[in-house]
Every structure is written in C-alpha cells, then in structure tokens.
Length: 410
Image 1 (tube, helix red, strand yellow):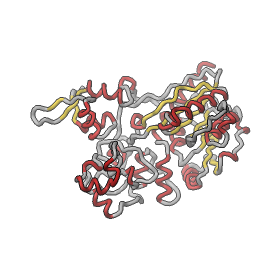
Image 2 (cartoon, rainbow, N blue to C red):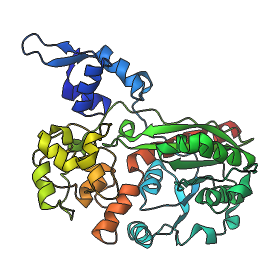
Image 3 (cartoon, rainbow, N blue to C red):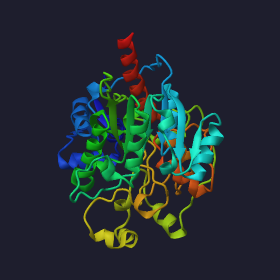
Image 4 (cartoon, rainbow, N blue to C red):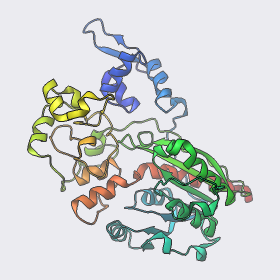
C-alpha cells in the first residue's frame, strides 16, 4: 500500500478540494510530512484515515458493492418525481414504478420522453387519490419541499400539518400503506426550526404505523457521484413487518470532474457537446484569473474587493464564489442556475459554466437521458435532481431489506 499522498491526491481521496486540505493542515486537523527535497506537503495513510472519519465516512465501512437482484417484483409510487434522477436510480436497482407524480410540465415531458412506459401523472399532488393503490405498493418515495409548522397550542398530529407538501407525502403513506417509505430532503432539515420540524415529521409518521430509522445524511461522493452533494434520508418501515433497513455502505472510490467529463470508469466517451450558459464580459475577465481549484481569494486584492463588494468585509470563507473546479476534485453541489454569483461552478479549463450535458454527467445521468424545455428549464431540472448513482445505492438498500423480509417468510 502506498505510504504518502500529495495534496491533490489526499484531496481526491477525501472528496474535498486542495484548498481545504491546506486549510486543514494550517488548522492542525491534518498533519503534513514535508518532503526534504522540495518541502512539498505529503500525507500518510494514517492521516487520511483520521480525517476521513471527521469528514463523514469511516474507511473501514467502505465496501465495493455487489448488485443484488429483487426476489420478486417490488413496486413503488414516487412523489415529486422531478426529472427522474431518483426514479432512474431505483429502476437500475431493480424496482418497478407503478406511478410517478410531478407538477412541473417540463419535468413530466422529460419523464415521458425517456420512459414512455412509466405511468406519469402530471398535476398537483393534492388532487391525487392514492386509495386505489392500498396494499398493492411496496415502496413510497419522494423529496417533499421542507416547510415549517405552527406549534402554538397543537399536539402536532397528522391533521396539524395539513396544507404542506409533507402532509401530502404522509397522506400517500397513510392511504397506500407501503412496506417501506423513503423521504429525501436537504441536510438543512436536520436543524430547521431548531430541529422541531424534523421531530414533528417523525412523530406524524410514527403515528401512521411506521418505525422510523434514524435519519441519516448521505454524501453523494461516497456513492460513485463526482459531486459533493448531500441528501437527508428519512426511512420508515411498517410496524410488524420485521423489515430491517440499513443505509448503503460508502464506496471506496471518490470520482472527480475528470471522471465525469472524460472517458473512463463512469462514462465510455467524453461528454457530448450541448447548450450552456456563459458569463458576462467583466465576470469572465475576473474568472480568467482564478486557477483550477481556486476561488475569489486567489484574485488580486483590488479585484477581490470589486467582485465581492460588501461581502469582502464579512466573515466566512464563501468558497463557492468565483469558484473554478479542478479536474482532480469532485464538483461542489450543483444549483439550478450555474452562473449565479454565490455558487459559481466554472469549468476547469474554459472560463464558462458547465453545459447542460456536463451538468447531467455530474449528476450521473446517462447521455441518452434528454431534458425538455428551455436551457434554463433543463438546468433547473438537473440541479434539483437526486444523483442517479446515489439513488441506485438507495434502491439496492431497499431491495436488500425487502429480500430479507421475504426470505424470512419462505
């Protein structure tokens, strides 16, 4: 086994940028060994393992995945289906979709064009009757929008969350009674309203007859996704079924932007050409000065002040501003608008945002998955999606849990 790693190699292994490695080093979190010949920083395997635990993954828990097939057909209803990232990943895992509901017409058009056989129900979820599916569905999934609740004088039961998208998600569970459900959301839900929002959701779901597995944040970089995206999972299993769900194990390989856009393990060919946004003239001139892996602090001090304006004098790193991704690191989390000032994701070599197809690859969509609507609509669909590879591992975890249930019955 190799004993030492360079800054860029350590960054790739941990799924962070080189600047973060240097910052951890300066803060004493990650102790470097200086090469006596050139004074370059290097890091031992022990260094990597110690910081890896703090960074959200225990390398001893990492395991190369072996595909598991379902013992029988497992059916699902997906809510807030979007452009199909979660649905496609679950399909690859071996799950059959009975119904997908989505309100956005362009996302529905994307779903229908790519999967004509899917039952895509376009419209507001409040108008959908799920009772005909009672007892016929194994899995309900959905990334419901996070909304707060009013707590004053209420016991916060099922009816108290009426009028929210979480209510519609839980209504579907109540009417369908699946064996297992998966709710996915942003990491921020953990601390939303000092944790009371999530606590209320768990209480409501338990009242519907489900045991809630402790919610867990999954980092996409640990599931063959070249992107530092995080999603919170809320998993419930129907009481009395004996289902034992375990979150998927982190995978040992961290993929980079090069893996996403160039031919290799993730894709056979280089990313195809496609439409994409561009920067205004002055912004492009400024970003031309930023090196791969750099951000606004790599600019000359006067340019920093010009670009950051009042933010220059505030605290915090703001590492997403004037950010150019390097080839050897995963992308920062993609947003719905690739050129907005707070969340630049500049191409490693060319001074421009990632194109639509590059966006799709970073989210691990196949090149054959075509998106409908205007360029901005396509960016929005992709930016809101669950990465396909992450969804695949979630689907495999569901199948493993359900397979154990039916093995026990047999």
